Length: 40
Picture 1: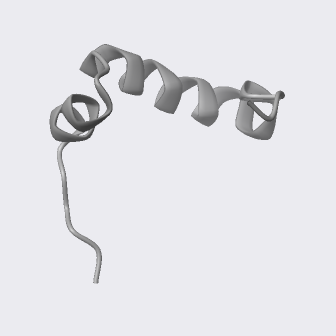
Picture 2 (picture 1 turned 120 degrees about the horizontal axis):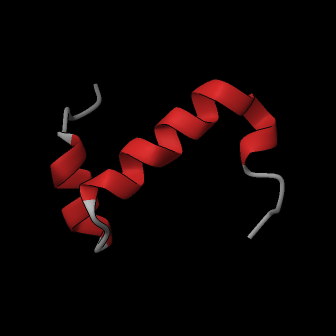
């Protein structure tokens, strides 16, 4: 079973602003695998 976390909770854990995760999610939804072409 997976724990449910909010975007804000995940962002806090990663030291990111929540808007960063929202933007990444949106980019992935628009461009799919091409959104993040590099490996690192």
